[in-house]
Each structure stands twice: as structure tokens, then as C-alpha cells.
Amino acid sequence: MQKQYIDLIKGLITEFKTINLEELFALSYPDRTDIGSIQIDRLSISEYINISKRFFEQLEVEINSDNGLILPLYFTSPEFGQSDVPSLIRNYLAHTKSRSFSSAETQLVALAQYQLQNGFYDKSKYKSHSVNALEIKKSTNELLLQKENIKHLREQYDALIGDLNQQKKSITDFQTQKQGELQQIVNNLETTNINTQQIQSLLTTASQSQTKINSLLEQIERDKQKSESTSDEIDKVLTKNKTEFADVLKKLNETETNYLDLYSEFEGKLNVIESKFDYFKERNEYLDNLIGREVGASLFETFKQRKIELTNPLIFWRAAVGVMGALTFVVILAIFTNIFGWLGKPDNVFHWENILVNALKSSPLFFLLYYTISQYNKERNFQEEYAFKSAVALTIKAYSDVLHDDKNKDELILKAVYGIYRSPIYAKIRATKEVNSALDMIHDLVGKGTELLTKK
Image (cartoon, rainbow, N blue to C red; front, side, top):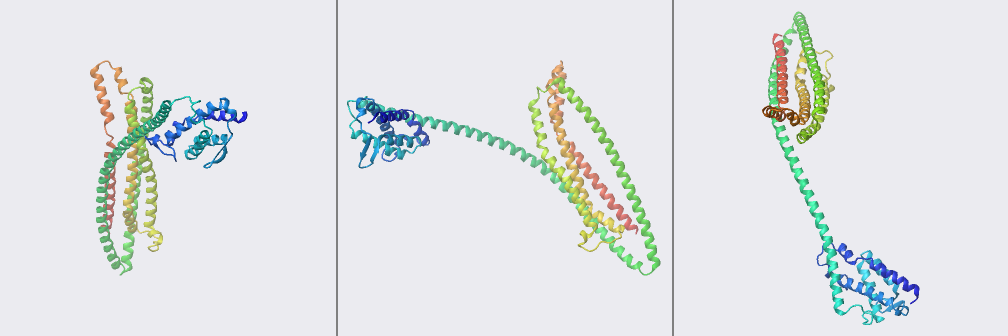
């Protein structure tokens, strides 16, 4: 064998020494514990490792001896044909690195037969190990293989434990979240039941009013037929209707004036509240600068999170106000135009009876619009309440530390905690009062309409 091929083979031997066969097999079979007994083709993994190390150790001894120059470059056998030794070694290393162990095994068996044919695979003259040493080496290789396998199995085990802990935490957080959502649903169900009862009561009242109105309309129709007998009676009825219509317009103007006064009063109260808001904001900033935010962080985060959770309902009711307002406008327009002319062409002259009837028909929409606005205000008040509580929570302990008397300190803490943990139920009570006021207003309007029709 020429010097250049000897140097080439020495480089390939050095390349083999950099390969960790045990680690490669452990990565290829991460789920097997009996990795040494796995059969590739004709060799097991343990035999594959032992023959590979034995071949390269014996070849290194032989190539570094005087016999290296007389070793044949080519190898010929009935099973593998003719091939040169460097190509076989190169193919073996490439297949091993790519974990194509079946192809690498073919190259390995051919290389072992090459050493057997040339008489130095088990040559006692150059053997650096006895039979017992071979057995020990084989056992060592198997132990190294099992070590690498156990190492990778341990890494997989740690990774699985980490994943299980993460999944456990995720499930716990999910359970806590769903419990909170369930409690919120229960609370909303109670509110919905109350609203349903109120709506049912309103529908009953409206049905009764509709019956009375129908009776009055029948009476009016009979009176109209009687009045058609003479023109004098028609003139009298027309004059009477004009007078009553003027009275209705007068009362409507008075009602509008009352509504404007109420609106002005509401504007004044709103301005007072907004002026107080600036004052409280200034006092909060002063207390934050004086005491700091070092204490009450946990309670602060709780109320802050509750405030954030109320953002989506607030956005929903804000959009519902706009949608309900547009829907109310469209439905009222449809009522006064006989559903845009589908049910017949509307009269060019609006009689006060038609106006009153159409107003009563559209009154439920006004109630729903009023309810939507009230619900939006309630959600906004809830959010402001929790924002205020989250701010107060930061100052309880620090402010109590300023006091030197333990009795006063305990009293301050008890009152502050009572105020923080008090549920913002007042918004719900106020909303109920507002709905009752709206029902009373509708009831008065229906009563006045009935009184006018009775007089006619």
C-alpha cells in the first residue's frame, strides 16, 4: 500500500475516534432499555460496536507497523465483490454518522473480512489484548452504550416531568378561571330573572292597555258613523277634536319642558360629580406620593384584575346602546310608516289617535333602550368602584402605621377593609329604582291617553 493511502487511512481512523457510537445508538432508540440486544441486520448493536472498535484498533496497530506498506489496497470477496479499503472505511463512517446502520453494517462486515483474509483480524503477534481483555472490552462497550441510553432516557424523563408540572399548573389556573366565570354567570342569572319579571309585568300592562284602546277605538268608530248623519255634527266633532288635540300638544310641550328641566338638573349633578372627581384624583396623587405603593400590592392587583375583567362587558353595553338606539329609531319609523308602506300607504295627516297608539306600540323599545343605557352606566360604575378600591388598598397599612395608638389603628384598618370589601350593590339598587320610575312614567302616559279617549 502506498504512503498516501496509509496517511488517508490514518486520517479516517482519527475520524472514527471522534464518533461516539454509544450516543448515536442512544439517540436512535430513545425509548428502548434493552438497546444492546437490538438486531440491525445480521449483527446486534452490541456486536456492531465491538467489531467496529476492534477493527479500527487492530487496523491502527497494523498500519503503523512495518506491514503497513505491504497491505493490499483492494479487497475482493464473493459476497461483496472488489472495492478499495479507503472507500469502504469512508462509506462506513458516512453511514454511521447519518445513522444508516444497516448500510454501515455491510461496510463493516466487508472490512472485517478484509482483515480476516489478510490474517491480522485476530493475529496474536499484534494483539494488544487477551481473550479476557476482549470480553472486558465488550462488556465496557455495552456499559457505555447503556450509560448513554440511560442519560438520554433521564433527559426525556426530566422533560416529561417539566411538561406534566406545566400542564398541572395550566389545569389549575383554568379551573380557577372557570369557577370565577361560573359565579359571574350565577350572579347574572339572578339579575336576568329580575329583569324578566319586570318585562313580563310591562307586557301584561301593555296588553291590558291595548284591550282598552281597542274598546275605545270601537266606540269611536260607532260615534263616527253616527256623526256622519249631519254636517253640523261633523263640524262639532272636528272642533272638539281640534280643541283636544291642542290640549294634548300643550301637555306634550309641558312634558318636554319637564324633561328639559330634569336634564338640566342631571347636567348640574354630573358637573358636581366631575368636579369631585378632580378633587379625589388630586388627593389620591397626594396620598400616593406621601405613603407610596409598597403595601397592599396583592389586594391592589386583585381589584385591578377585576377592573380589567369588567372592560369587555362595558364595551358590549356601550355597543348595545348604539345598536338599541338605531333599532328604536328604525322600529318607530316603521310603526309610523306602516312598515315603510308594506301594510298600506300611511295617512298624510297624522291624527292624535294614531300618534297615541303608535307611541304606545313603541313604548317597549323606549324601555329597552333605557334599560340598555342603565346597564351600561351600572357596568361603568362597577369599574370605577373597583378602580377606587384598588387605589385605596395600597394605602391601608402604610396609613395605619402613621397612627401611634393601637386602638385607633385597629379601628382605621377595620373601617377601611369594610369599605373595600363592601360589594358595589348600590348600582344595582339604583338601576332598579330607575326602571321602576320608567314604568311609572309609562303608566301615567297610558292613563292620560285613556282619559282623553274617554272624554271623547
